[in-house]
Length: 349
Image (tube, rainbow, N blue to C red; front, side, top):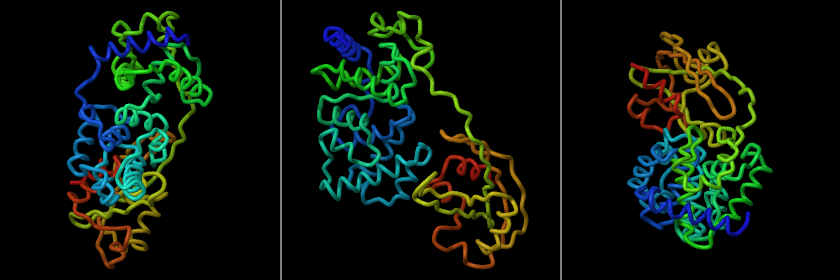
């Protein structure tokens, strides 16, 4: 892109942000890298309105990186519960400990240093460096990809390697030499509130006059959607094993899906679940019934949960071994749970 055009693009965004951008978000009144890092990690694939109450609760509980590093993973995941993408919560905890143990509690000031933290990619590291240190760095999150793909009529799905490379090059070409924080915030605000995926508010866009998608009448086409692929379907039996007012929970392995969260035991069949009540958990089943199936979608497959509610009589202490615990309904719901497990427990009378 020609230098004059790049300067005009950036100048219009900066001026628009001063008039119409967001200025009252709870992480905008600070240059504290801890708070900015926390907000940027939470904002990955999650809307601002959803993040704000979680951000505020985290700061109340963990006001600094040292407090977060001292906490157990269970504490962190319990507070994260409901925000989704739980690997972010695990990486948040790992990164806090890395900052405390290797950096004496001081966050790196450069994008490269920040990118070395678990769960911090190139764009997130750039955003943290911009807002905490005023660094001249380029961001390219999902909203910014959409803005650039439309404005410059970039063909192809933005998640593919060759398209991402082109978008990074474009993002760097329009980066201004000054007012980096205002410009970066303007890009975020434009993608979140004006150049939205559905029904973009083009007449409110400060760079509409130079937008290629608008000129070519291709706003609805760009950026190209992810190539469609049928999601695999899976089924699992979730055992809701209760004893009076208590329910049995198991902690999942730290790696993999729902890693480190507390969940209901899962099985391939009802028969296998019933057998496990005795063989694995030391219980006699007084009664059992199958509940209404629950559908849950992941990014890579669709899961159908077949809940099996068993009322148990405990005849040994095997269920109290590490990794499995009996909890009353209230403490169970306060534990870090996957969203569908929480929904199932809320249905229990």
